Image (cartoon, rainbow, N blue to C red; front, top):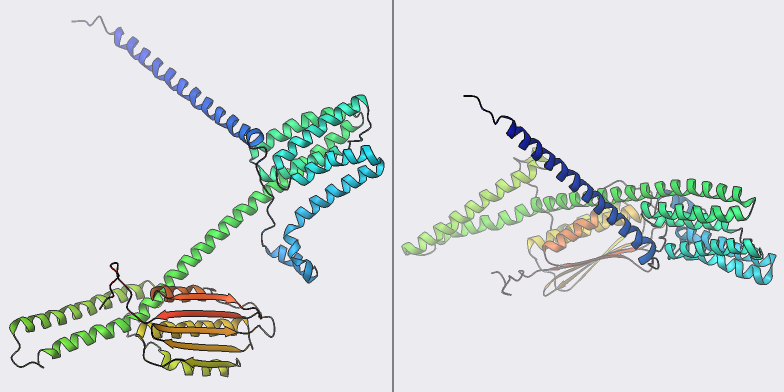
Amino acid sequence: MRDTTGGAPSAVGQAAVGQTTAGRTTAGQAAAGQAAAAAFTALRDDLVRHALARRPLPALSESPALDRARRLLPHGLRDTVRWAPHLAVCAFAVLVMAAQSWVSPFAGMAAGLLVGIPVVLTLLMPVAAWWLTLLSGLAAAVDLAGFGSLRLSVLFVTGPLVLVVCTLRLRPWAAAWMWLISAVVFVEFGALAGDGLRDSRLAFGVALIVAVLLSGWSRAGARASEQASAAEDERGRRARLEERTTIARELHDVVAHHMSAVAIQAEAAQYRVQDPPPELAETLAAVRGNAVAALAELRRVLGVIRADTPHHGLAGRALPPQPTLSGLGRLIDAVRVSGAPVEKTVTGKVRELAPGVELSAYRIVQEALSNAMRHAPGAEVRVELSYVATGLGVRVVNGSAEQPAGASPGAGHGLLGMRERVAMLEGRLTAQRTAEGGFEVSAFLPDVPPADENGDQDV
């Protein structure tokens, strides 16, 4: 039988497709409207609501070029290099006000303040400075149309300068609108000035090129600074991981020694008692079994750590004996042989400390001596050890360098390694320059078990 309703589904389908297309068009228009409203709101916030917001022009960031410029100046003026843009803007504003006052004492002073204050204000409130510049332009247009006594043609220079600074401090969309509005005002001002129309166009054209170049350079510098900061953070993170790996490898022998002692003592304890009860024998056997299992896990973890380091070929070898404070004299003698005068002082009652404390103290002194030889060659170094009831104080102080130290190879993460070791023992570390121009590293390493969450000490 023939189906006479074959055209109906087609009509319904076309209606559905039309509704879907219309819905998509409406949604697209709504999204575009929302985007336009958001852009208008952001523009209003930048130019009107937050016109008095403080956006101070930052000092120049550290860079090799800045270091070269600093070395060209006398010692007392080297710190002012970072504020060179601020000094240039202030000097220009003073020059403009002085030039205006020279032409006419009273009207010139008023005109100088009218064009000079916005220039200085760009260093702190760029949007407010722009509004003042627009008002100055309107005042100049009125003056040229009626009196012509204020001589505000200098706005052809100061106005674009204010816009250049604003471009560096605001978002691109807001800066573009500022340029458009200013062009209308100042080109009209130039038309009233007659021949100044050509000057206003030229000034705005040059200023726009300068603003675009400076804005691109500033944003490229900001991106490069962010990338350098991220790279430095990544290097620091890797250095911390490497230092923790080194500490774990060094402490393996310390922990393994204790666990081996536990296993041996548990094995021997059952032979020290005649006819030990079965419960005691089982307990001692369990202690020995747990100690042996812990040793096996330690070896397995150490194998993984070594496999993840460039020295993974040592995975099957035993670590060399870890240094203690008893070997500190040999370390200091080796440093003295290299030409560095080192003086060692020990206070308090000398005693054997926990292996982890002695190892960390040795490494801290070793790294501090290495830094002293690297950054202050030939300077006198003092090593002080202070034994107290609760731990050990370590202090290494070097004097100022007798001659400037050259660029030294190395990762430069020695202090980071010290902090990792001290944090592991829940101690304290300070590293700072001394008043005499040297450097001081001071640490306290507690020799007591750390407290648990309930405030009790581990036994």
